[in-house]
Image (cartoon, rainbow, N blue to C red; front, side, top):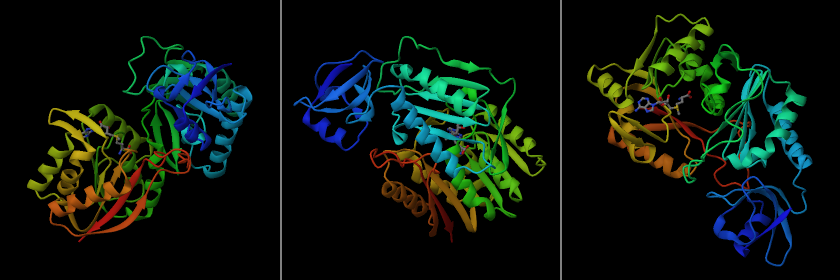
Amino acid sequence: MRAVTVNGYSAKWLRKGFPWVYPKEVVKGRGNPGEWVELRDERGERLGVGIADSGWLAVRVFGFGDAPGDATTLRGLLGRAAALRDAVIGPETTGYRLVHAENDGLPGVRVDWWSHHATVVLDSPALAPILPVLVEWLIETRAPRGIHLCYRTDPRDAAPSRFDPAPGLLDGHVPTDDVRVLERGVTYGVRPHDGPDVGLYADMRDVRAWLEPTWGGTRVLNTFAYTGAFSVSAAFNGAAETVSVDLSQKYLDRAEANFRLNELALDAHEFVAEDTFKALDRFRRTQRMFDRVILDPPSYSHSREGTWSAKKDLPRLVGAAARVIDADGWVVVASNQGEMSPRDFRGLVLEGFKRADRVAQEIWVGSQGPDFPASSRFPEGRYLKVAVWRLD
Ligand SMILES: C[S@@+](CC[C@H](N)C(=O)[O-])C[C@H]1O[C@@H](n2cnc3c(N)ncnc32)[C@H](O)[C@@H]1O
């Protein structure tokens, strides 16, 4: 195995278990993308083992100290990741994250489990060498009907000219219909071969779980609704009406299909293909009020109405929502930007209440569930911030 020597700064971080080496930290030696390399400090001491890349990262680290860079190391990490899910995911949930990249010691590697299918998401084509072990391990331990590969490359990397293997099926078959997965007894249809966005964000499961007993008789507005997971859970748990707003009619059709999968009558449930700000403005003008508003926006998005960025626009969004929430109504606000601190997030939300001249009580704060563990070695691990506020 070739050796890559890193500078003192990187050596310090590697000794603490940080899983990345940046190109500027490499003093000597390099590996070709996809090659296993040994990491050493400038005195020659072995710090670990990883897979080389040629983009914004030079090496992703899979083992520290003397760990060998082989199938045994990978299988050990995969087994440990699976044991956590076996311990925390109940029988009423069949869609969850099985491997959570850096936070499970497998940097750049995510595996989502969808009832009988696995979706593998790699951050870089340089990680392809782990696939034979991963596929073998999945077949041995979970017997999936299909293993589907996709890539989610970083914007800091130049777009690769080719992917090897190409995104698509690694083993088994492509499902002929949506795969039904259970989340706490509610059914959703997902497309594991459409990764990474297959149709359900499992990291919101604990938020939906907390809200479950609180929906009875409420009028719910679910913005950025995607395939309607919050709306379906609300309706399933007794909400009187739901309005699901999303720019994409395609996603709203899937939201409607999710209502049908759960045998929920559709008469009190609306699906509105519109920009969230436009919809909120219309509800304000027509004085249509709600008891619950969900705000789970993407970090960035482009629409005919302009560009949305959570950092810039969260106060405006919270303010617009606060104007259509009745007295004692609640707003659920989420941000999945790892680089935004919980303190900044809270500040932006409070700014929104101020703009709408509303006073609010924070009644719950939450984050991703245990199948999305946050490693103490990885500062951005706890990326999801969710808060529920009750308005005066
Ligand atoms: C992060 S997902 C929301 C996930 C959803 N809350 C859930 O838990 O399933 C973002 C969604 O926002 C939608 N979207 C993006 N910009 C929008 C806008 N300006 N107005 C309405 N929907 C938008 C996208 O189409 C996508 O479905």
